[in-house]
Length: 203
Ligand code: GRF
Image (cartoon, rainbow, N blue to C red):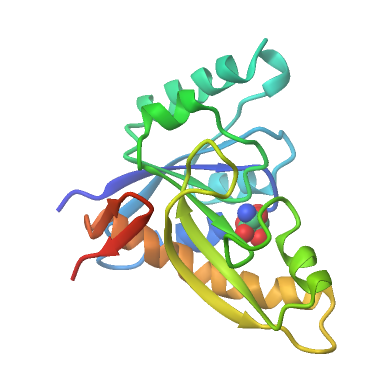
């Protein structure tokens, strides 16, 4: 069966991208990374992609007059590379309805907390400071409201008394690297069914 093609958007170090690339390289994987796009020239994700021979492109937001025009350039590249699915992997920009409309229920994000708790850019720190005993990670479909789309899967991570933001984030990240490829595989095999806010996983 033909593999589905993924376009990954990343802004930073790209460890989730790496986990996705590695999982796609395994026998019987139903997906492949077709293109990696970053809004930052210095994103290590671009280097990770190039190292594996994957097309990696920096699209500079500063070169476009609006968010929509920047997204138009991204959509064009995704379409040129025949992306079936878009995965946000540490992409630090809120998407507009433009790109979301072009890839309806085909954009995923991973968040380092158990949504709907602790949305935003500091999920691990906010959870630690709040004093929760359990945090974790969430993979969800992307809608215009940040970290709000239908939840596909979550993994809990216990908070230890002596945790720092770094130690907690590190344990959550390990789970992210397992969870994201699993969800991508489910998507690729057509096993995710969205019903309103609920996502059913077919057998
Ligand atoms: C991860 O913690 C992810 O949950 C969040 O941004 C971080 C990205 O890390 N959305 P990396 O760039 O994949 O290493």
